[in-house]
Image 1 (spheres, rainbow, N blue to C red):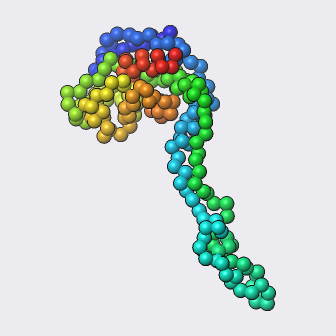
Image 2 (cartoon, rainbow, N blue to C red; image 1 turned 180 degrees about the horizontal axis):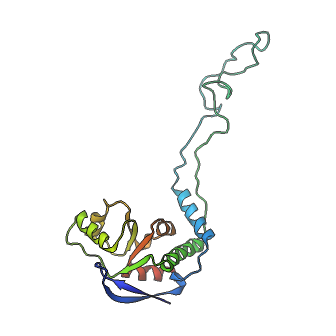
Image 3 (tube, rainbow, N blue to C red; image 1 turned 135 degrees about the vertical axis):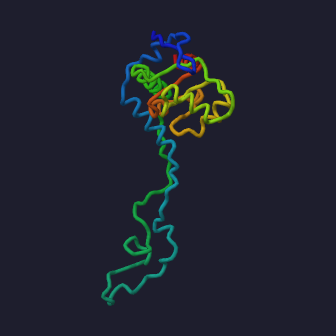
Length: 206
């Protein structure tokens, strides 16, 4: 059981929270996290690259010249891969890059990512974030107060003031707790979790 300090948005201590060792203190295995991150990035690839083989290049139906007696090498089509304007040999074709990773492995990788952030003192739990209005300036002041330049903020309840104020700041990403994944946790050096989000993630992964 790990006990972390809960801060308010002005970085003042307002309480503490007990985090389950089964979620936030898991032994980190880089190969597991690497596998899950690779699968997630592969699933994002569009895979629409394409080239034409001889079957799809138009023209080339007529033999360019007779087989013998011209002094040229034998040729059956001017769409041969050897010719300019011809087909492509072994070129890329549309495909899916996805590969399956078991659900238990994905959950384990997320636990390991959270554990690595907690072990490195890069996980902060906040009681809440309240902004008076939708203004990037307000969120920028809040982020500056916490020393955040590149961070992932995890929440449970949607707050339009918060979402719309943070969207123009580079390096800051807001993510709902039910969408939390190992890749985003590892991508951002700082992880900020609202208290309700930390509890929600813990209940989901236990």
